[in-house]
Image (cartoon, rainbow, N blue to C red; front, top):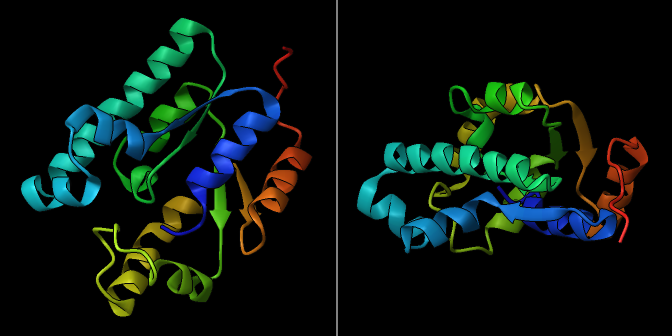
Length: 165
């Protein structure tokens, strides 16, 4: 939450010519309600089920269309049972966009569309719960810099093939 996943993924996909899908946006399109509304109406367990279904649908579309895809996941996606295993089993490489917690707090305190952000204490607790899952990522990139610099760091890992136009 607040690391710049959607922005960085969009910029990276544009840079290498891959398709970009934002998992949260896909969920909004599928359900017809915003993420905060969905949490309020149906709760987190129902959200996680839709998230899991949409993640699998995105992977299937990518495979079916032979379209390399950058997927920006939600902050809790990899912490849900089976999601990280599913991604790895299907050849996905995961990049943890790491940002110091103080910077994250500064960023998200200005946002009003984060259903799991209630206050600093609960955010710190949520971060600590998710941290072991983030640490399972294949790569870690620092994001307390400008998004284009983050993309440069990711490109330096040299794991993505550019699509020829």
